[in-house]
Image 1: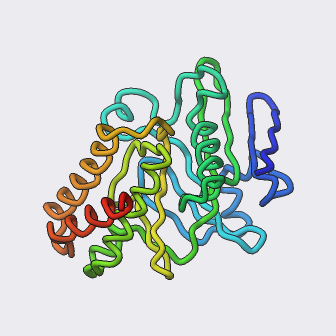
Image 2: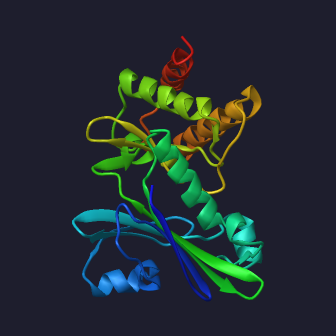
Image 3: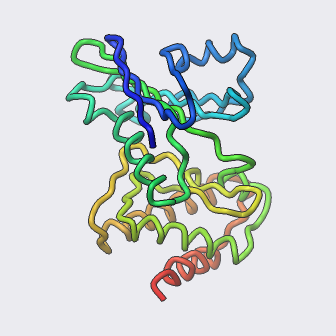
Amino acid sequence: MNIIKQSEKPNWIWFNGNIWRHCTSEFFEPSYWHRQHAVVGQANGRGQVVFFQYLERQFVLRHYCRGGLMGQLVSRDHYLYLGKALSRCWQEFELLSRLQQMNLPAPVPVAAQLVRDGLFYRADLITQRIEQAQDLSQLLMHQRLSSAIWAKVGATIRLFHEAGVDHSDLNIHNIMLDADEKVWIIDLDKSRIRKPALKWQQANLDRLYRSLEKERQQLPHWYWLKSDWLLLVQGYRGMLQ
């Protein structure tokens, strides 16, 4: 991947030269894409997520924000600056770049921005949108998934684990299925590559199971059974055979 770095203090920008020929700070402003009539959708979450079209492709712009109690007690989108290499935007951009080299089904990194503000910074990330894909939580609100799909989900998680990818927030919203029934794993903020070990791998799976149970208890229609989890585990273990 041809990563191009540019600096215009207080901004640092990295972008994928294989996809874009240039990138400016405006590209990280949702208002810019609205003015271009390029916005094709938005998503709810901790931060603002905007889907836009540019050069005949669709992209996802995400502004880094804290959620939960920390987001209420301190600034939602300011982080302590400890150097560019330790910033959340660069670490996720660099991780996604490595996952591309490993041919793992994760979003293609396109651009990242860090804006220095004294002792703190704000950050944004742009990735290429996965075409014709929905996250599993959206699907499960309307239909059950086949046993083959659940097995694919487990097998895909196993691929990431064998590569040492410890997902910091593996939940049902961060697993997507495209029109060809290919499974993708997204939102790798604060994730990392480490030595494979049963403890953190099981912690990933436990987190995913809790998210399924949480949705089942909170939503009026949730087409998931505990037997589906057994299918996922079988797919996960099947990668060892």
